[in-house]
Image 1: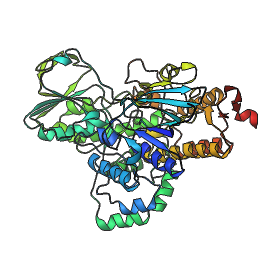
Image 2: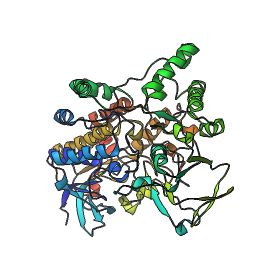
Image 3: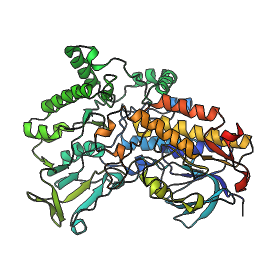
Image 4: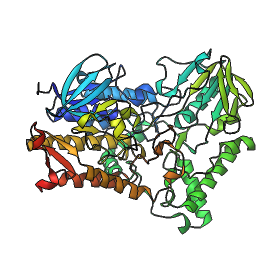
Length: 546
């Protein structure tokens, strides 16, 4: 009974899961992957709402491990839409024959560590039970939806949608009265598309968000060919930049130039568009006064784009720095509020009292609607993992271990949970970087660690409490100089009632994170305990060995 059924179980067949299958099988390991959906794609499988697209340029939001893949796939737009990204991931799964490792429409419902055999017991929604040497959680940092339940919601007579689980068939809003609740990234992408169809659209906003125009365009054949000719250099630069994209952060600070030059730089960034806008100056996310300058510029742009001054004012984020919440990238968002069929509801001033069969009861009265759309985001970074039944040493539930906030080593491993690895977990760059590259980097680190175990005849690795404390202190030392705690964002878990207020992603940037990962590996995985054989008494600390 001490023999594993498989070397590695991978949970999730999105970007990270697909690459994990490819890399680990390439290293000669047997791999089983379980995916809740009926196809690959992860977030790009589930989030099919109108307007869904990536806010990282397509050339960069793609796998780097295969130069041949880079050359053979042709992106059509600067910022690819959800259908195109899904087609790309399906193509990758087929090209590298990854589907044979995946069991679709199956959730992993339980993981428990057997201390006698040093194996993980894996239970699935399909009734299968198997034992694995290692588990890789590729569940995604933005996959566990935050689903509000409003009083009376069960009695609503119309259709209800959530952006994170959109129907596969097209949804027609023509002639419909629609309410969209939420103005985060998903809502900001969705609202202009619904406004084009709906008879009436009510946008229910709790907190306005900063949004920058995408200025998207379609690739011309000759321009795409030129870009692909320089792909290897583009990738090299991406690995060297904090956000994992080929755009170095400026070293110029806000007040090192005069007001006219600042305005010119802001305007230039605005016209280029995209999520690079907050990095116009080096101190935007560290200096409140510098941040206030760029906030004032964006407020001015909202005033230009929205014709009704009162509506424009309600759309202006107040009281928190730009970048402390996820910067949004839009196509026509602010202009949507110039349409006669679009109404902005300011929920702090006019809160929801209940959902009624025919609409939404606000403090000001009933808004009659046919459709409710929730764009209310996610229990980010930890939600998908905490909601799983993961039992480590001594029967300890991971949800209990993280009850005061998640702590990890490098964002990939948790003390007390041997041979369990996380991709894009709390304490890793993940959502603050190009997540395709961060997925590749972390999967490579995990795969190299497993290769190390094989070369040294070891049964596994377990993060040590002291290393976990040290990583937490390192992450906190970087976060303390950031303005990111100054907003109630999902970055700090503030969107989920009762969730500990902790800055979840690593803010030091991708190169610095990679350097820290390399230091651990190069020191023979210092900070991890080596598991030798199947005897508890045979556990030895790497620090003691050294």
